[in-house]
Length: 203
Image (cartoon, rainbow, N blue to C red; front, side, top):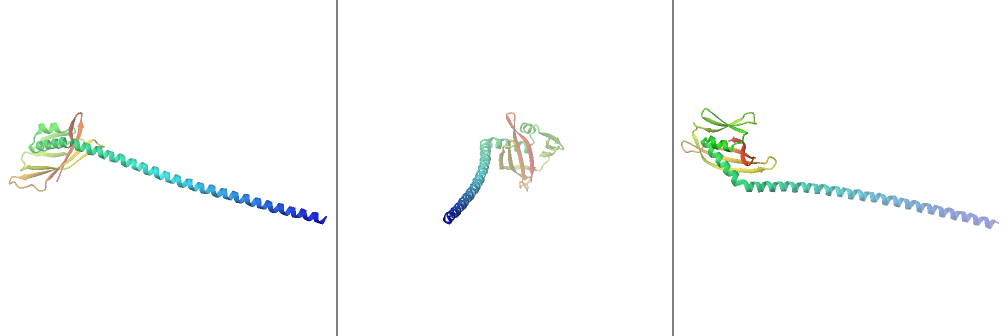
């Protein structure tokens, strides 16, 4: 009888030990699953970050490509129209330095009107609070000796050509008038003609 009771105790101990072992194994398995799930979330977050970074770089590259395409289009317009715009600029310089009002009216847009007073010819810019530039002085003591195009560009935003000209004048003694005059012209298409929509002088 004592022997049978001892067997029961031993059986219970084995059962308890087995239960603890199974519980420990299950607990370790659960910990392992939690760890794997956490690692998977970290990897997913890392990949998401990498994808977002790549998307951002792709967007930046697309913007750069778009800007380069605009620059290429502007360059082609500049190249294709340089001869024409430079000829119009030459006509303006000749008309401006000789006081040729008829030719100037052909070249100027409606935004610029000519005014003559005190033997001087002015260009009045309508949309600039009536600001005016002296184009020609009949009593002037200098004359144009040379002119050079120093800059030229097409602006796709305003669809205008801007040209920058250096005018060199000489006095009655044939000596250069210092400093030279710098002329800025802006051309814009009106109907089917390029007209000067803005102008300015600087020294």
